[in-house]
Image (cartoon, rainbow, N blue to C red):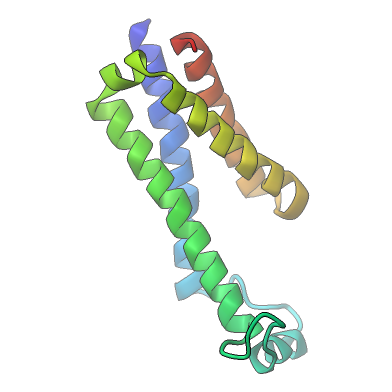
Length: 139
């Protein structure tokens, strides 16, 4: 059963990687994040945020989505590498798995409050995987 923790970590991290990769592809290569109302999209392209006049709300929207994707992909890559190649480190220092749980919980709160069913479901499953692995590895 010692492999169960590794399987859970790989599964949880892979889900995050898949979600992050799909999000990146949708952001830069599809119209999935375009507004349904064309007037809103045009307004976003013509309006700057209060913070700065050096960008538009549209460019910020695309940039936020892109960086959000990269964050999920990096989180996934780190924990896939740890779970596959350095599981002994995680057994010795399970605090790193608990950090992943905290990260997952933060994404889960965002998903509940702001997102839709598909990322919410994936993040919930990933969170459960990391949480069970953390509980099995200890404190």
